[in-house]
Length: 294
Image: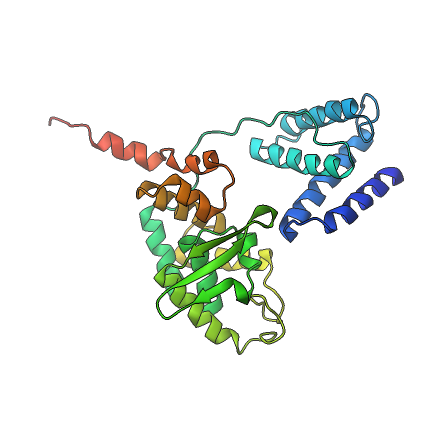
């Protein structure tokens, strides 16, 4: 990347560091903008896309086309890149580019079928670590994003004799309180008791610690989920799959969409409505209702 674009990136990273975003969002934005600037260095653009609004719009649209036709990126990945570029240009004082988002496929969210849910819970119960048991049950019983989970501090957990609630910081630092399911409450209580013996327990406010006494990272948390999925004999059971399972279970159980949206930290009800779409299993069950004559 040419030196002038390296300077542009460095300036953006400095501004991004002061933004009220999660560490995960900052890393994602930084990566997406770095890729865009690298593309910009070799692209044949009209005008100066870093100073002229019209040239900005043309360049971002051309980059969107590049991601779709050359890089073969999925619509959600392209839209994430466009969101990062909106942030980049806004912090440069030009404002978001006039570039439409791609339509996302209307397939249902990935959630675990009933049998896989049982296998997951049984694998979690076999975990010797109280930390990993609590971590694995969080998205299943409370639905946080993985970045929200590792961002939890001790003060974000409130436990009483029979109840409890969790304070989660969503996108943009927006807080929400989620009541604790009894199984999750018991798992968190067990972890808080065991946590006292871990390195960093007195100095670090993080709810989930790593073995060195630091805050558990997103990567470290993903490793835990992958290991438990392997124990359960599941091809994949990510924290996001479990979040989807949490939401799908509530929606199909008749919970009001507004309540589900609040629990998930969705800003738009339309996002939550995606959990009402039928799955392949739903379609198969529908066919089972048809009579046969043999």
